[in-house]
Picture 1 (tube, rainbow, N blue to C red):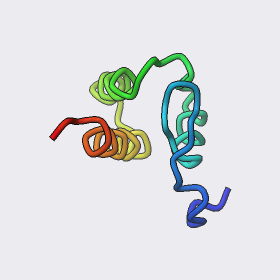
Picture 2: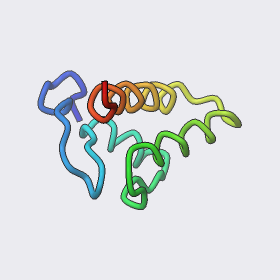
Picture 3: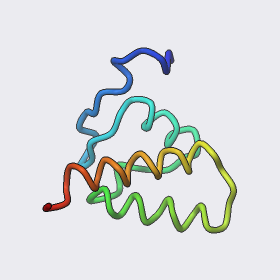
Length: 77
């Protein structure tokens, strides 16, 4: 997968979540079943809990991206 390709950075509907192809590939790489989460908050919580016990730069980056996306798209301002 070409991670520099802008097409891979557009959000698409995956189950109940809006994710990029890049994020999906990273989650799949670590066998995280994103399809089982009902919303982005649940996935972010899972990743943060995982990262409290494990050091993983890729998942930390994904967690940050998801948190930022969630804030700007799902928080009433």
